[in-house]
Length: 342
Image 1 (tube, rainbow, N blue to C red):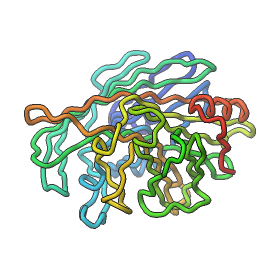
Image 2 (tube, rainbow, N blue to C red):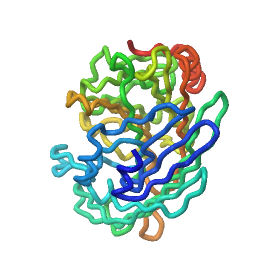
Image 3 (cartoon, rainbow, N blue to C red):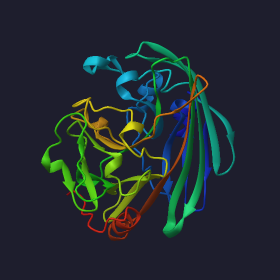
Image 4 (cartoon, rainbow, N blue to C red):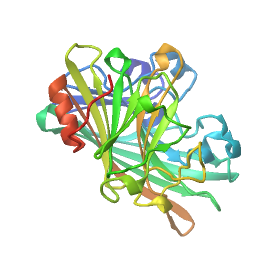
C-alpha cells in the first residue's frame, strides 16, 4: 500500500514490538494499523489508485477534520444540501515535518471557507503521533492535534477526529459508546432503525454494515465522566475464522456540556449536539461499505483575534481469538454487558 501513496506524498512506517502503523502525507492520515502482523485494521478504499489519481479525500484511515460540518462541508448549509469535502482541508497539503522509529509529526497550512458565515479562514493544523505497545499484545497511538485559525468574525471551529473501519465477517461490526444510565442517543441524520441500535445501563451500541446511511451521536451530558469520552469498534476478523479485532478511541479533552459543542444535527439543527459520533455508510457500491468512529472536541479558545485548540486522544488496537478480544472490549470500555450484533 505504501508504494501507492508514495506517488502522492511521502509515507513513514512507525514500528513497535507489537505492531506498526503507516502514515501518509496525502490527507495527513494514519492509513494502516497492524497488530502482530495482522492485515490492516482500518478501512482503506479498495478503489485507492483512482481516488489518489483524482486527488480525492476518501482514502480511509484515521484523519482529522474541522467542525462544524454544516459550515464547511455543504454548498447550501442552510438546507444541508450539496455535501462536499473541501480539498484544502482533505487531502490538503500535509507534510511530514519530523519522524523517528515510533513518532511522527505532520503539518498543513491552508485557507478554508466557512460557507454558512461567508468567511475565509487561515488555518494551520499540526498532528503529533507516538506509537506505543500496551499490555496483552495491543497497540496504542497517542495523538495530539493542534489548530490555529485566523481571519474570522463569526466563525467558530473545533477539531474532529475520525477513524474509518470495515465490517467484519458476515458483513457486521459493532460500535459501543460507554454512557450513563438512561442516556438518549441523538439521531443525527434521521431516525436510526431499532435493529441498528441498542441501549443498556452501561453503553449505546450501533450496527456497522455499510447498508444504511445513518449517524449516531452521544451528548457530553450522557458520558460517564465529565470531559472524558470513549468509543470502540468490534468485528470478527474476515481473514481468519475464530479471530476478532477491536479499535478504541479515548480522550480526556471531550466537550463537557452543550455550549462547548459546535456540530449540529442535520435532522434537528436546534436540538442537542454530540461529543461522540459514529457513522454507517450505504447503500453504495460493495467497495464503499465502511463505518466511522468519531470524537468531536470543544470549540476553540479565542485569544487576540485568533482561535486555538490543542487536544489529545489515544487509539488502541487489539487482535486475537474472538473470546479474548470480546472480553478485552468489555474491559477497555468498562461495559460488562456488550453483546455484538450478529
